[in-house]
Image 1 (cartoon, rainbow, N blue to C red):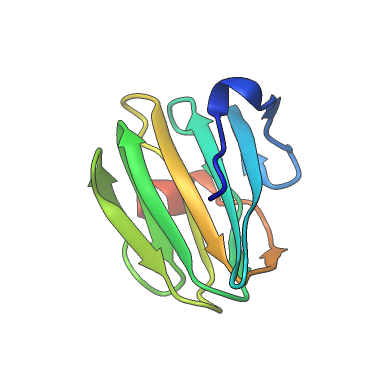
Image 2 (tube, helix red, strand yellow; image 1 turned 45 degrees about the horizontal axis):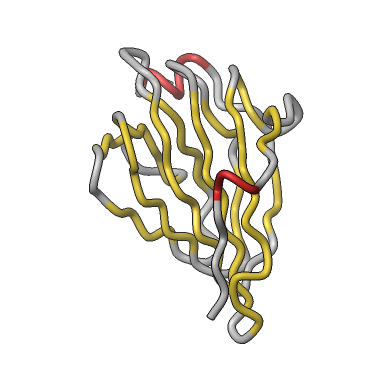
Amino acid sequence: MRIAQLAALASEASDPNTFTGHARMTRMPGLSDAPSVKAFRVEFEPAARTHWHMHSGPQLLVVLDGRCRLQCDGEEVREIEKGDVACIAAGERHWHGASAEGPMTHLAVNIESITTWFEGVTDAEYAGSG
């Protein structure tokens, strides 16, 4: 059994090269080796979001608090809330972040995955009009 105790793990500011707005991330590496699983607790301030990106394996997003806006390339912006889970398939270009109305915290679980980052999400894309 492997346990990640959040109180014992360091939190870090999000990288402005991969996030718009302010967020804090707590990494939980090495939860499983086969398959390889990495987990991240991410706390987003209102309207903060990731840049466009994709993963080589599936990603699960578990909303712990607030409302999460997310979008896969070519699809409409969607919102999910506390207790909801999204599964983003390997190779799906997407972004996710907090609604403009309040902060959001999610647990991102990446399975057998390497992340490739792209450009930032524009305000129009975030609003669902771009």
